View: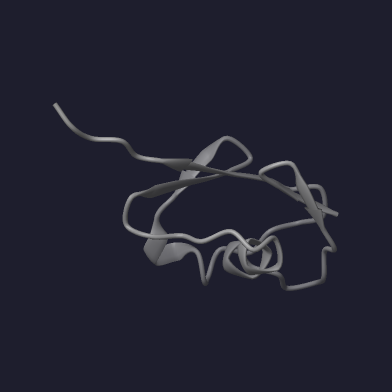
Length: 66
């Protein structure tokens, strides 16, 4: 299983961060930071970054203003 923002999704061999986010119904945009096992992964690498069983993925919304 893969934990995406406290949602468990089924792991499959060759799964990418993007695959897991889609299965967990998590949207990613330019104002979202994605962390995989406590490391930041750039949005441009989500489709190519492979994950393992028991991976922890977290997303964080950037907030700006003044």
